[in-house]
Each structure stands twice: as C-alpha cells, then as structure tokens.
Image (cartoon, rainbow, N blue to C red; front, side, top):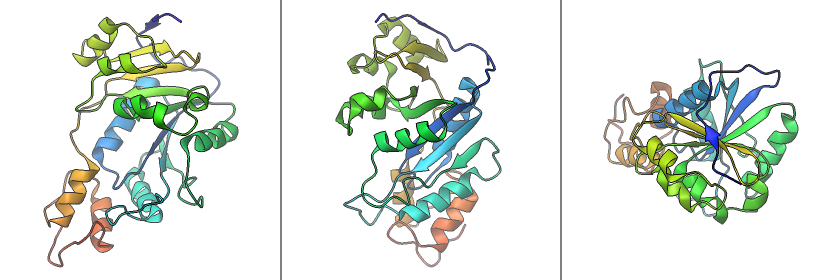
Length: 241
C-alpha cells in the first residue's frame, strides 16, 4: 500500500448512485451537521445523504433525548432538501445498535450504489475501539470530514491509512480542499475540508438548560420542537423563540 492519491475530481457521473451515510446521536441536530453534510454532498457529487440517528444508549442519561425525538428533529431539520433523507434503522431497533450491523443492512439495501460513510476526524481515529472495526472498514468507502479542534495530520495514527504528512498538512492549512486515496482495505477514502462551524450539541443543550437562546445554531423548527417538548433538563416557562 502506498500513499498515492489525488484531489477529488469534478463530478464524473456514473451509472450507480453515490450515497453518503451520516450517522450520529444528533442530540440535537444543528447547522454544523447540516452544513458538513451539504459540503460533502457537493464535493463528492452525492446523489443522496442518509442521516441515521443512533438508537437509545444502554445507559441513557437525562440529556439524551429519546431516539424517536431525535429522529423527529432530524426530519424537521432536513425538510426542504431533496438530497437529504432520515432513516430510523437504528431508532426502531431493540437493544444496542452497532455501526457494522447498520452498514451491512445499508450495503444490502443499496447494493448497486457506492456508499460513503461520513464521519469526523476524531471519530475515524476512534474506529479501532468500535465493534468489529476491521470488518467495518472493509465494508464501505469513507469520507473523513474536518472538524474544529481536530487536524488531518492526526490521521498518521490511523492503522487504516498511509497518506504522506505533506498532503495532510496541506489539508490542515487549507491548501487542499480534498484528497482521495485508498485505504489499506482497498476501499476508497476521501478527506474533505468542510465549513468550520464551531457549533456543538453539548453547547446547545447547555444553553437550553440555562435558558439561553439557541437561535441561529439550529433550524427554527428544531428549536421549536425542543421548547415544546421541554427537552434537555429544563426549558424555563418564559423561554421564547
């Protein structure tokens, strides 16, 4: 395996569909998620991006909204974007959901399509700690997205990649917008610089709990859903839009 690769070329329309798979807790979904997905859709010429909210964790805490509520918020957030779709594949599954099982189901359902599993740099580096990681990285292509606080040069620590430091550094300083290469599993990996919106779900939950405004951090319909359902510990009675 060498570190050869290339910048992502202009769209070369093929017969098969190209689909992005964007999983996450989405607790709640916000503009950081949506903008990153839109950037990836455009840069990779994706026909569709599938948002997949995770199911309820075994040790659910008070600041994790129910899976059905997070699914509802995701649907509200993507409404109006014909390229975005939300699946409840993990929300309706009893017990713990594993990414490898979800991807297997999606590979079966979209067997004539190219799938790109979209995740941030930090999440990609954590894959060795996931359930059946070696199988996971051999199942699908990957799109690794920039995130505030993470560096592409950190990817030298990944056991699945072999990309030159100079290329990773070029991505970090904005000299490159994207880079396409091959993983050690022979699956494609694309590194993408997306719009750096420093918005976090943790920060949003904290603001809601303390009665502070979350306007312009997430779609208005999602904000209204949070308020009307009194999510995230406590929404003071007098909190307004």
